[in-house]
Every structure is written in structure tokens, then in C-alpha cells.
Amino acid sequence: MAANLRALAARCTFAVVDKGRSLADELPQQLAKIESKDKGLLQELCYGVLRHLPELENDVREFIKKPLTGKQRVGHFLMLVGIYQIKYTRIPDHAAFNETVSACKPLKCDHLKGLINGVLRNFQRRQASDDSSTSTELPDAIAYNHPSWFIKKVKAAYPEAWLSVLNANMQRPPMWLRVNQLHHTLEEYLILLAAENIEYTLVDKKSSAIRLTEAVDVNKLPGFQQGWVSIQDGAAQQAARLLDCQPQDNVLDCCAAPGGKTCHILEYSPNIKAMTAIDIEASRLVRVNENLERLQLTADVIAADAATPEKWWDGQLYDRILLDAPCSGTGVIRRHPDIKWLRKSQDIDVLTDLQQDILKNIWSLLKPGGTLLYATCSILPEENSQQVQRFIEKNSDVELISITENTTEIGWQILPNDNSMDGFYYAKLIKKQ
Image (cartoon, rainbow, N blue to C red; front, side, top):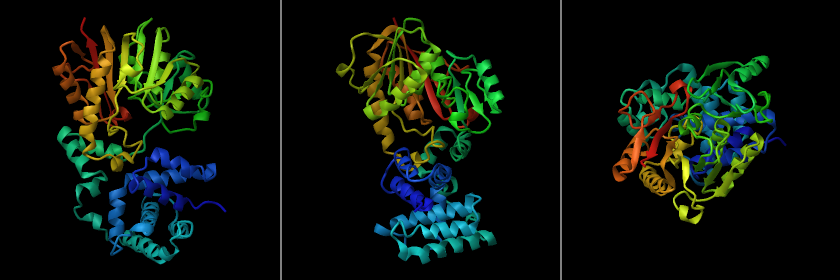
């Protein structure tokens, strides 16, 4: 019997929101239970519910007196899945009703069929009459579908851009390509795309990253399996250019998984002496090795903690270090909407202390005159410009190199949707001779 997609979506979103599971861990388990033709819809339902969670929760609250708890709790997420379909997809309402209510059986909550059917039909009637409570002023968390603590931080950091940041987080991310210029020049690969009728909207002048007009299956990209091209956001593709490795450099990539930047550095600077890629989670290094193998590149890949180099460092100083520091991930919410609900305000202080600890320990591995590129996929100043300023104030041998035309800016903060890129931060630091 075919699996019920709405039941799988309810289980997945329940695991993320109530159990604290990562969507990246949970969704593949559910996708493995269905045929390829259904995978897109299941992803749409899971991502959609997590993007619009406070708004959908508010819709459900209008029609039930007491929230579902305990063993019935998964039924709550089934209602969220049902309302999301009615509100945001082209699925006919009758199909949304039938499939959602039918999901009660595999979820072992048959006794909730009447309740769930009633909630969905009441919501549909409210939609049809346009007599919606959303016309009244809602709390920011519901109106903008982000946690209150995060909205406050974004408003404080970007008083003129906060709304565009929140809106960008609600969008589906575009597909960016990185051309492996060991195989083809950018111009040559654009010709190959044209031959396959794959359209692109933008080529980033700084990095040569290509933004496609519409996402495509990777297997339709010319030479993907042969390593001619990779998928990598335009913001992440700035790292290799900014690190600017020179021939015979000894290079370290910290917190390297899944390996996109490791591979890009090797493509961009093929004449370096050696590349060492470390990550604290050995399981995540599987992806690093897979990417290296597909692209036919070589690196020394080590499961290691960047905060304790004495346990793994071979004593050879590095000319270039990329520190893609553990961070809140608040710049990539559009790709990982579960970040909004898994990350808590109290996590930020813990992360900033960890970042400073890693920065201090890794700095000691850099040659005098060497370059360290500090990077995060965060938009919070505490993890970015303030973190770098704190490090400079504590260390007299640090020189900050300007990345942008604004020479007073500490590093380069890319906000979500700047050129349709992810939110990202870079600061380039030189160790004084």
C-alpha cells in the first residue's frame, strides 16, 4: 500500500518542531518511503509548514478549543499540513480534505477524523468568505512567521532592511552553479547550458557564479557526474576568491563539511601545496569525500575539533586558513526553515564564545604574513562584525583587510536576497609579520 504523503509530512514536521530534529536528518527518512514522483510534493508540504508555522498555528487555534497533546499531538501537525495545502498549493480542496483525513489511519489517530475534517472545512469556509482574522493586527511572530527574539535582533541590526530580510527568508532559494574551471571556462559552460535550453538569470561578476532562472535536476546539467559543475550558493562561492591562495600555499579549511568550499578552493587555486579539510563530525566528512571524488580532487580530510588543534595538527604552519565557523545559520533560513524553530536566543552567546575560542586557537596555526578568512552563514552582528572586532582588540598581530568599497566596514555582510544570494559574512585577516 502506498504511503500517505500527508501522514509523512505530519510526522516529519512533528519531529522537527516538537522533538527538535533537523529537517536535513528527518526528511530523507520520509522521502525514502515514497516513489520519486511524489518526493517533490512531500518536500513542498514539509518546507511550507515550517516556513509558515506561526501563521498556520494561529489558523488552527481559531477552530479548536484545546490544543492536541500527548499521543494526539501528531494530529495537530496533520491539521497544519491540511491548512497549508488549502492556503498555498494548487491541490484541489476536495483532494486536500480526503488525503489529509485519510492520513489519520496510518498515524493511528482515527478518532480525530471528525475534528480534523471539521477544522479544514471551517477554514475553507472562512477563506471563501474572506472573513479572516488576518485582517486584524497580529503579533510580529505570526505576521512575519519568525520567532520574536529573531525579529527583534534583525530590527535592531538592520533598521532599514529588516523587513526585506524576513521576506527573503520566506522565499524558495534559487539554484546557483559553480563552474569547475579546470574543465571549462565560464563562457564555455554557458554555451553548454544554452545547448540544453537551461536558462540563467545572472552571472555574479565577482565570483563567476551562475544563477539559473529555474532549478533543474542536477543530472540534466552538462557534465555534472564528470565534475564539470557543482551546486553552490553565490554567497558561498565568494570564499575561494577572497582567500586568494597562491602557488605552493599550505591551506587549512576548518569546519569544512560538506566540502563545497574545500573543492572550490582546489578548483580555483590548483597549484597550492596541500589542502587539509577538518570537521568535528566524522559522519559529515562522508559528503566531503564524495564531493572530492566526483570532482577528482585531493585533500587530507580529518575528523578533528578546530578548538583543540594540539590533538591533530602536524606542526606545519598554514599560509591560508578558511574558518567557516559554527554559527546560528540565520543567513540560510530560506534553505533550512527549521532553523527558525530549532535555534533559540540563548544559543547565540554559546556560539559566539565557541567562535572566539576556535578563532584564537586556529590563529596560532597561521604563518606570519598569512591570511585567515573568517566566514559564517549568519546575519547576526554578534557572530560577525562584533566577533571580528572583539578578536582584533584582543590581539595586536591582526590586520583587517577591507573587502568592500566601504573601508570603515568590518568585513562584508551579505544579507539574504542580496543578488538573490544567501545571508553570509566574510572578514579577511592578515597576521602581521
